[in-house]
Amino acid sequence: MARTRNSLLGMGGQRKKLSRTDLKGADAAAGGNGSDPLAHKRELLEKLKEQAAKKADQSGESGAKK
Image (cartoon, rainbow, N blue to C red):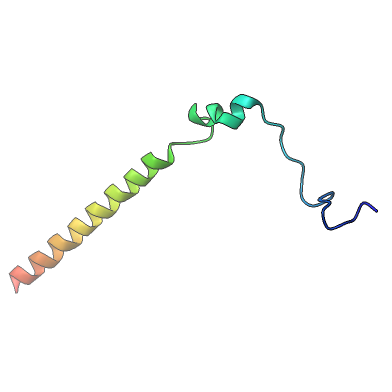
């Protein structure tokens, strides 16, 4: 009788019990598991802009040399 459509018994693993502060995100804000995702995004955007500038400089220089 335990195997009905609505019963999730045996479907996946057990979840960690979270405290109220963990649910609010206080632990993640303390930097427990890595860097800030927005900071990571900013770094990636800076790298892409630098690469685009290098490519533009290279294409501009090769066109000027010919």
